[in-house]
Image (cartoon, rainbow, N blue to C red; front, side, top):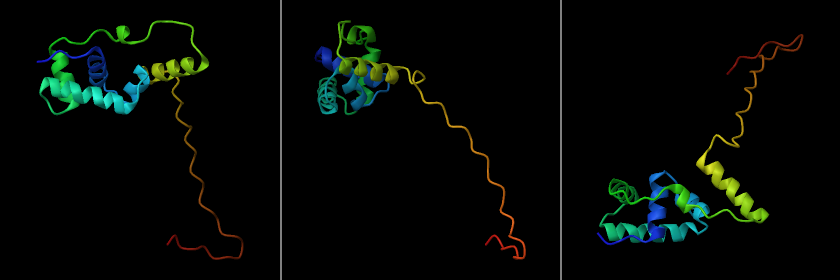
Amino acid sequence: MKTLSARETACLEWVAAGKTSYEIGVILGISARTVDYHIHNACSKMGVHSRQTAATLALERGLFPTIAELLPPDRRTSSHERDKQVRIQNMLNPAVGAVPAPEKIPARAPRTPAPGRPAQSPL
């Protein structure tokens, strides 16, 4: 098997974690199309046809570094970068920042006919 680039390995690691191309792109700061490009190249090098198979093979062969190594180093960030980091954290831990489920609205009681009017059939 040919050697995978660092970006191909990073994309496959996130595929193994269950992320979509869009989510991987947000995490790595690249477009979803570029993620697909790296995954396609990794599949070609590994001789497989699907991203899941490539991620499984890479996992079995111990090719993945830890996720912490893939994230950019801490630095002063703009508000855009902070927003991006919040989105990443929300993707990594969906329970954080999750919107609580709305309260169930009780069913309305059936209408009673006005005085002097006959009740209508439900059909």
